[in-house]
Image (cartoon, rainbow, N blue to C red; front, side, top):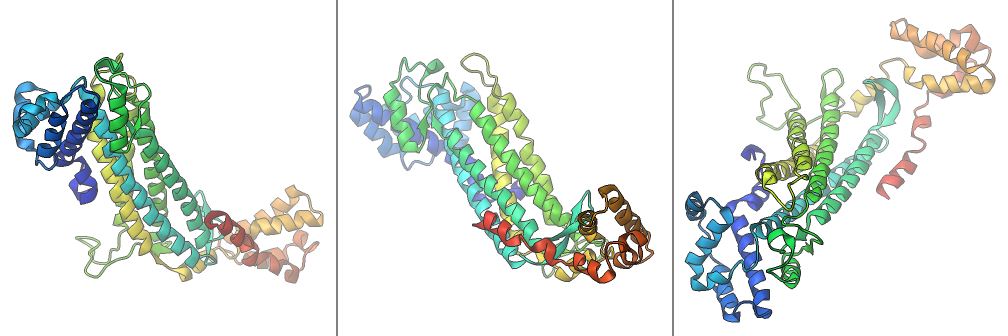
Length: 433
């Protein structure tokens, strides 16, 4: 992971100290159940907990052992035996490395997802507050980047609120999907370890049992998980791109908060750049880069291989830590977003009323003019405004064909903003309840 974009609580989930603590808990819980089943002595399980529960496992020592044995779990178990003593020989009875690795991976992903859900909650709270604040703030809607029809800034934000509500639901589902435990032994047959051990460890670690684990937990679960993270990252980018567009000098309807002492450019002192939302766009790309490798990890050989292992050691910390950072940053951006309603109105008026063209088109058809003729009449007057020749209402009022149906006074109500906001309450009730 890139430490610049990592919060301590998110990165700590993936550090060696956390990993080895989880490994020990899995092994010790398994030993406790094995003792209950008579597989190992009860006093051995008690000693394991007594000497290992608060132990500080030495990563450097484990790395040293691994350089010889070339196996991370064996290196860990060897180090545990140095701490616990002879009773450590009862650890890992009938288990295989993936029982420890995959179950630990589930716990780490579960904890990471809890942080991600908290991050989405912060984003949702910020968006809701700003949406309600600007529920009726008029602004221009754009399609293809071109002025379309009036909306409100609150409606824009309501759409993002709905999207991040879906993002939260996806993360909840993804968390459930990866929260499984496998303690099934070599090739997943439970030949040397009882299913009761798996059930016990699963309960203690806050996981469900994996119905069929072969020798690993099936990677379709993880593919779905990282795909969900990728979609959430894309939602972050969509909102970030909107803010970046709104901050352009020619638009300037909203912008990131510019703090005291902040510098925008090393060369140009006047610059106020959208660096936070540009950063969010980049982080979204990083998170999405985990999706395809996770998909490719699904097709492992037979009951297991380790082609997925190196991939997951990279993508899991990277994707979860960077998405956590991005969500917290987006929440902060939305909490402090500077909004310029006066510029929104200025841009809305910029094309001299062209944003009301559809209203006039529909009114003409309802008065009896064919749609083709209505479109032609409205468009030819609109094009004059595009060329900078004058005002849309003036041209329509002077148009001979339009004049057969409407006077200027009758046309004026078609340029009302209220027409476009009459269902704002309905939409808000759908989104915010």
